[in-house]
Image 1 (cartoon, helix red, strand yellow):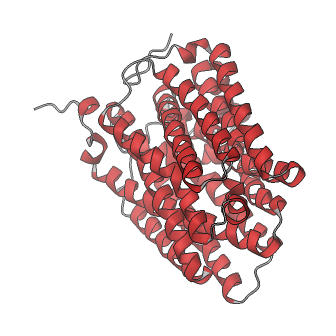
Image 2 (cartoon, one colour):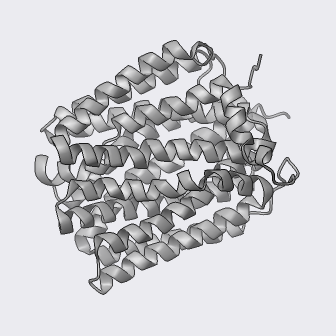
Length: 412
C-alpha cells in the first residue's frame, strides 16, 4: 500500500532519524528560550539600560555575518550530523559559563557579551547544518510536512521555554541556567544517536566560486531571494523581543514570570497555526498567504506597542506568532524545495544570516531606538515599517506573490 505523504500529517515521523532530530531540536530550542529569558531579565535587572538589551542581539548576530562564507561550505562538505552535535555541546559550555558567572556573583555585561559571541559562533555553524540536515532525513515529498513539524517543535519550545525560564528564574538564575544546560546536553546526545545520513552531493574543491555559490544561487532565483529578504526586513523592523523585559517590568508591571508569559505568547499563536498546517498544508495561493502573514505581523506589532493592558498585549503577541508562522512555513518550504542539495548548506548559511539579521540585529535596532526615543515608539514605528515592507515586496516580487502550490517546485 502506498502512503501519500502529502496527505499524511505524520509523514516525517515515519523516518526514525527525523524523529530523533525533532526531539533534539525541541530540547535545544527549549534550552535557548530559557537562556534568552534569563539573560535578558538579568541584564536589565542589573543595568536598567535598554541599549544593553540591544547589544545582546548584536553580539549574537555578528559571528553569523563574519563567518557567512565559511559556515555554509562546512555544512556542504562535512558530516552535518557531527557539526550539529559539536555545536550543541559548545552551546552547553556557554550555558555552563553563564551558570558559573551567576554562582560566583561575577555577572557583568561585557563578560556576558563575550559568552554570547561564542554562542553566536556556535549558532553560525549549527544553523546551516541543521537546516541542511533535515532534507537528508526524509524523502522530498515529506519535506513540507517536516517543515511544519520543525516549526511546531520550535514554537512549542517558544511557548513552554519562556514560561519555564520565567518560573525558574523566579526561583533563581542558577536553576534556570542549570535546566538549560541539561537540555542542551540532552539535545547533543540525541543527535549523536542519529545514523549518519547520506548527503546528496559530493564535496568539491574549495574555491571562490564554491564559497559564493549560495549567494549566486539566491540572486539568480528570485523566489528564494524574495522570500529570504522579505523576512529580513519585516522582522528587522517589527521585532520587539529585546524590549519585552521593559514592557514586562515598566509598562505592564509584571515580574520574571510575566516576562515568560509575554515571550511565550507568540509561540501559542504560532503552534496553533503550525499544527493546523501540518494537518492541512497550504494547497493554493501560498505566495499571497505569506504576504498576508507579514502584514498581520506588522499589525500585531503596532497593537502590542500601543497596549498598556496585559490581555491585549498577549493577544497582539499571539497574532504576531500566528501570522509569522504562515510566513515561516511558506518561506522554509520554498527554500528547501527550490534549492539543490549541493548548495543547500551555503544557501542556508546565507538564509541564517538573514534570519539572524532579522532577529538579533532587529533586537539591536529595537534596543538602540528605545534608548533614543523610548520603548513604545520604537515598537510602533517598527510595526508600521513591517506593513510597508509587505506591500513593497508583494509589488517587487510578482513571481513570489504568484506561487501557488508547495508540494513541488515549478521552476521556469
